[in-house]
Structures are given as C-alpha cells and as structure tokens.
Image (cartoon, rainbow, N blue to C red):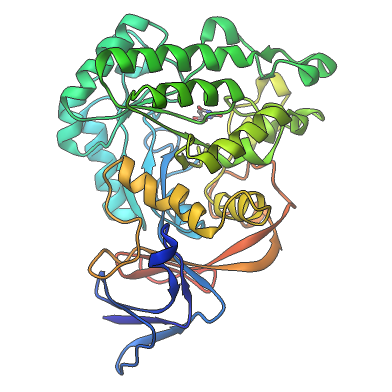
Length: 431
Ligand code: DOR
C-alpha cells in the first residue's frame, strides 16, 4: 500500500531537516522524502498549507484499563490519542489491579492488539499495589515490555524504599518516573496554597510539597546513578532544583503538562472541579518559570498526564472531586497556542518536546520524519483556529478546564505504522 502526502511542510525537531517536501509511505515505512514526488498507483493526500510532523509521543497518560473502564479504556483512550495527534503513548500503572506484575502488562498488551489504534507502552508500578511498602516485580514486567516504572498518582514516601527502587530499576535499565509530592506536607490539600486557597477557603498544598520530594529524588538519583524522570513539574522551585542537578551531571530528565503552562491557580477561583489536578495549578510566577525552562531545555518534554474521570466524579463539591484533566485531545493545540503562537518556541521546538525527545529519553522508535523509519505521522493545520469542545472528545473523560477556549493547531491526519487512523480530522480507517 502506498500513500503520498503532497505539498506539506515537514517539521522535524531540527530545522535543517525540515522543509517543504512530499512524503511517500510504502506499507508501514516512510519510503521517500523529496521536493516533488510523482508516482502513479498510490493514494495522494494533498496537504498544501499544512504541516507534517512525526507522530506525537506521550510518555504519561492514564488509560484506566483494567479496572476503571467507565472512565476510559484501551479502545477509547487510543482513539482519543490519535485524535490528538499521538501515535505512541505510555500508560500509567494506577489501574485496578495495579500494573505491578507481568499478568497485568500482558493483559494491556493483548487488549491494545485487539482494540488499540496507536502504539501503547505500559509503565509498571514501583511498589506493589502502589502501597509504597514493597517493590513490584520489575524484572518480569521489563520482560513483558514496560518502558519505565512509576507509582504516579502517589509518592513513594519511604525514602529508603525509593533508594532501593532506583537501584533495582537500574538493574533492568528502567527509568524511574517520580510523582513528587510530600504527603506529610500536602496532607488533604486540594489547590495550591496561597492567595486562591485563602480566598476560597479550600485547603492548600504548599509548593514545598513538590520541591521537597524533587530534591530528595534528585539526591537519590545522584547516590544510585539511576535515571530519574520527574513527572508533571509545576513549580519554579522544582525547575531550579532540576537545573542544579543537571549541571552536576545527575541523570535526570523531566516533563511538564500543558495545563502547567496554560493556566494558573486562578482557574479554581470559581470552584471549577475540572481544574482540580494533582499537582495543583500554581501561580503566574510558576507558569513563567515553566515556559522559560521549556525554552532553556531544563524541562525536556511535554506529556499530557491525560487523567480522564467520569462526570459523576467531577460534578461534586470541590473537596470530593477527583484530581485530573483529560488531556490527549487538547495538548497539541495548547502547545501551538500557548508556546508557538506566543513566541516561546517555534514548531520545531514543539516537535522536539512532544515527539523527538520523548522518543530519545524512553528509547522508543519514531520522533523523526526520515526515510526508512516507521510511518508514524501527524498532519496539522497550524493556522486553523477553533474552539475546544469537550462534548466532541473521543475520550470518555470530558473533564477539561479548556472547554470553549479558542486555540490553533488542528489535527487533520494521524497515521500509525502506515495506517490512517484519523483522516480529515475524523476517526476512520483501520479498526
Ligand atoms: O491529577 C492527577 N490525576 N494527577 C495524578 O498524578 C494522577 C491522576 C489520576 O490518575 O487521575
């Protein structure tokens, strides 16, 4: 099978590997990249005026399968990913049962094969049942295909166990993804501690809760030599600590999520539970620090932290609402709108953060448009502006604080291994 994308601008992370080029796909590979390709007997897709990027790679999402399929499942979550331009996603371990052993990883992989439309890389837990007491079965999970370990959603509060986890994970060449929030500082907080917590009366989570565990985990990484990846960086303090650790040569990488560069704590001022997320939305100073760190390369990548929940878990009192934002279908547009349109970085920089560098950090294929690589591709209309409409999400999670927001950057085509999963902005094609 042959598909020719004609007339588009190919945007790689490296500007010198980018330009107006046609892209020929044969079966599941990128066969040719050239200024003007003219061949017969192939499907031609005219993408004049559009931008062709390597398929986006999200190293942090929650697919909720097994156990919470009413929030999301492999079929809906992978379709949501494709609609958002993602061709590879890594799913977190806080399922039911928890992904802490081979059987659960095998189940996820089997279900992805049967029902998924994008590539899914499972992440195993650090501790059994996310209890923070005993290490999970990392070796057998590695054999089954996990790409990292994480207790995301919870912090491993026992420092000694975290040290052992880093040593153990290193044996299997697995990065440790750290959810950083000191539970003894955060307690039962629900928003950032500061002006908004004061005026709303909602319990605050100090930024120190994040910074303290970031500092601990960076030091443990220095001690053990493990590769730690700090999840969803939300504070200026974390950025500073990570910069210092990187300068010292500690093996640390990190991510932020679109809501941490697009919103401040003001989003919860009116008790909007869709903006309740963990870590909480912070201050303008933090948002500026996150943007600067993305620009400077201190924050390596952008991940969605796609955390779908049922409306019944969100349309309740703020205190009782679940933490999380449904993010797969808004991440690219938020990156284009808040970072590219506002001049923080250009489209190449965004490709670097959302595709090229995630692939390099987690040793995944893809992240670049070049000949003889897998045909994982997204075509975007960067100029088209539209309003985010949660009712139209393919994800079961409609929980977004961005509903109605005007953005730019619309996904037109998503191709996974040579198969068109999204065409002209709608799901269609295989499966
Ligand atoms: O807001 C969040 N929701 N943060 C997390 O770390 C976990 C996630 C979830 O699983 O819902």
